[in-house]
Image 1 (cartoon, rainbow, N blue to C red):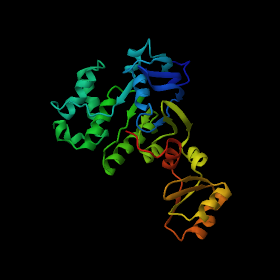
Image 2: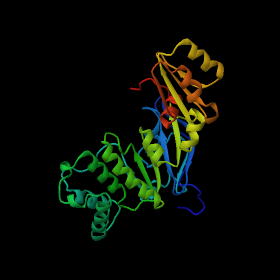
Image 3: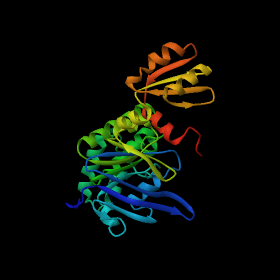
Image 4: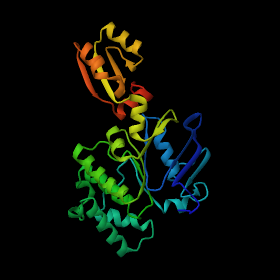
Length: 307
């Protein structure tokens, strides 16, 4: 990293347009060294378009974007040598073994054969696949394949790891295995940029979050700060609420979402939400719980389905 560059990634008024469609609309953000930054947003929010500009897959339309202090428009080759990318798609070579997939990929970075084999062996142990080295990747489960894609992204000892929905479609056990590996990498100081649809994944892995929609940044901050600011501490969900409940929520000025057959009320510690609403108005079906990042996401981006 350039000693004069305080950020791993620095984007200013970054924009990406496909004809008349604007996928990323003038966003500005940064990634600090050793930080894990999460990009959240519904389908079509602009997350993947953003990271594709960062790792040089898609040219930016306007704005400025620097990685390691290097302008992506003039130093793409130097940037690519120092990053690892784990894309959404499983693009492993089905004709090669587990070990060969790593060794062949290492050649793109001019890593000598013996060193490539040593690195591959270390990474396969790191992701707990050292017992499958000679097998074709088609014999692996979905979770194993995602771990192998992660290992491949680490073959060049990157300073920045970019992960585009790394655990989509995995069962809970496989997701947790991937999370544990990423937590080890973060603990060792690796800078990570991740997109995800899983709010528990974002809360667990990310130091800071950016929530996007329609190509713009809605909010940015640490997970717990976002939860407190936009959903409070406690939540009460009431199914088929009486009008008396609706009136009380409005009169008390509680943060809330009025849905067709349900009201979701958000409160802070001082509001004593569980006692105020739960004890008096929970003759109906009522759920009392802590506020989560998913509450924040839905409040900011809406609850309608995105195609």
